[in-house]
Amino acid sequence: MNKEMLKKLVDEFMARVIAKNPGEKEFHQAVMEVAESLLPFIEENPKYKQAKILERITEPERIILFRVPWLDDKGEIQINKGYRIEMNSAIGPYKGGLRFHPTVNLGILKFLAFEQVFKNSLTTLPMGGGKGGSDFDPKGKSDNEVMRFCQSFMTELARHIGPDTDVPAGDIGVGGREIGYMFGQYKRLRNEFTGVLTGKGLDWGGSLVRPEATGYGQVYFAAEMLKTRGLDLKGKICTISGSGNVAQYATQKATQLGGKVVTLSDSEGYIHDPKGIDAEKLAFVMHLKNVKRGRIKEYLEKYPDATYVPGKRPWEVKCDIALPSATQNEIDGNDARTLLANGCFCVSEGANMPSTPEAIEVYLEKKILYGPGKAANAGGVATSGLEMSQNSMRLSWSREEVDSKLQNIMVSIHKNCVKFGTEPDGFINYVKGANIGGFVKVAEAMLAQGLV
Image 1: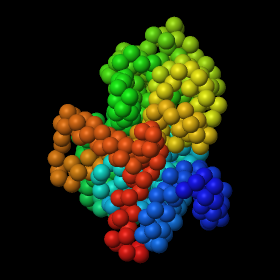
Image 2 (image 1 turned 45 degrees about the vertical axis):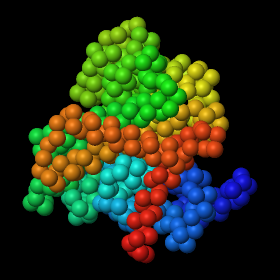
Image 3 (image 1 turned 60 degrees about the vertical axis):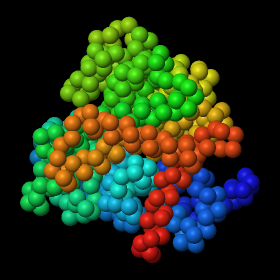
């Protein structure tokens, strides 16, 4: 299919999607990125076209919207919005995180749920796609306020989820504390102890390696990409954005595999430590972010040799490998060009859709190693799936066992991307590979189950 025909097909398809979902720009962006890879494949496989599989995948099976009233510590009533997008259950129960952040809206959650369908399919585990959350901001709230909010949120959500229906997990703003409060409320309401949420504490149904899984998986995927060019992480300079869960464990795993991580960031700016963020420095960052809930600039109080750059992201720092681990659209076209001009030849995404369409164009045009989020950051949800399995069997696997399964899953995802994404000239287009690889499994299940 030539470029003009593809553009016409994509434009017509996107016009219908945008008309049905006005104003949801992140959702439009996610659908368009998938449509560009999938529409030529669907044209070659008319069974998917006749059954309108892609049109059906872009329409959520169910959207749940609700209000979340709660009392703050001053005794004042606060009201937030709650959401759950149950996107697709063709291959298993809905599975995907809950995000608590002021920027949360319907368009962002639909984009995340749509991406989750493909990501979960790629893991090889039987999980459908979903996403949810609230515009509630846990930052600056007391533990009691967070508990009251989580209990109110779960009071409504509990009637829509279950271990065989929909199994949420954490995402931005939802860590072990929030999962604990929500799980406790679900148990109290339903009078049952089931694996209804993943990311639980180890003493009550959680899995070893779950906190580390997204960051570890992101680095494992980068390592697999590097192997295709006879390279590894040893001695490579890595820039990482974010300083939360994903960034912390990506730093740990990249360092363990011989890389040198020189940046971390938060919403206010980034730190650059040319000597590398080793295990001792990372332990300080983890205490700062997970316990003190401080800002990344406080790193300089302990390590004054580093520099802090306010109001910017770390993509101007020279590196071999970029590991974006903060949020969507954090690398634009200019950032991508700067990265490549500074020697970056590998990008592995730990965040969801951190690169804009223009940035992705730059990567593909220059033929660097680029692992899109739906493939590279699938380690988190893969280990959530392993937690579900352990809950169902009332078992706990060892750290080595879970880490080995995670690594095998990331290798399988990489193989799938190579299978569907290798171009005639030998270049591996991981965007195309991930989209087609994730689509085929869901599409075949949808065909088999009829028009539902």
